[in-house]
Length: 389
Image (cartoon, rainbow, N blue to C red; front, side, top):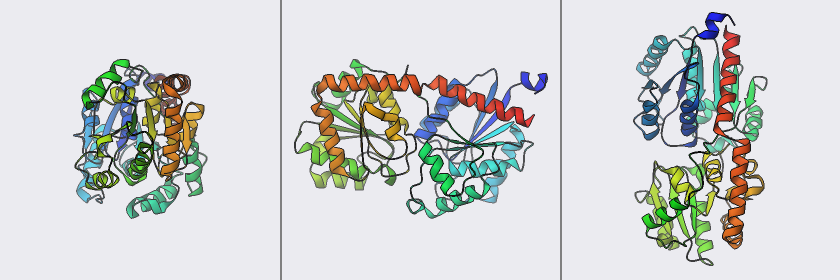
């Protein structure tokens, strides 16, 4: 790399499907918030809306952000493609980083209209079966497999995801593993949060709180969590459950019908989308994941662990690897197994859970600290940029 190239900023275009509140979107924000401003000049394009909580947070970083205004499930129109082309021509990025399958496909299209020769793909999901995917998504996943020799790097956050995609025909010689990273200065233990959140919910200070934080989607399997909660409450009727995420609120008819049917509405607290996840995570006694499929490296588990909260997770993606021996792992789609693991965690007592939580936080600090992970991304960008020049 010549001196002039080495001294100027690298213009890095991120193309992502959308900016709703989710693990992938939060990872992008975390990465943008910690990258070296004197070396990298990031720009974000969202195929869908940018007027979201995460979109606004990215804007506050001073990073240019564009929206193509697409709707979920809609095919790109010639106007949409032309807008994307114009944005890319205006920016002339050095590198293009595509996030999720739709963003990846858009990244490869943009390469045609810029001087850039290198793209980077980011895959944050597992695929246990294409039958779980929408028809259009399954087509795009297969198409990406055919194009997978084109990017300079394919980033996987999970070993299981890497192997599953290779089995689907994804090229294996340009990929790498980079885990998600967690801000342990933001996600940290807090006695105050435990007291404040219980007061907000109108609960006694000694109430035991189990949390499930994720958007409402079939792969998250909220029904598994609700059914397990009903089983646990037969033995521990004073336990409360805190559910947080997009569409996880009283307006969700199917979710509320199940809660009412099981007669546990007094013990289930649906808070919907929230911006104070660090505070809510630190308030829990037990964090959980009830996912049936699709997870690769769930952010919410690492965030809870960073807060010193022990976790009970389903064995999907790399959840078991993240938790290791600091929590419990159960099979997906088995409410009784999930309820039994919660029961086991409750029977450890507060001191036993505290010890597991401390071990969980140490595991995150030692293996998945945000600055350490961001440095790996910066190194990858530098190496690909060096190839380009």
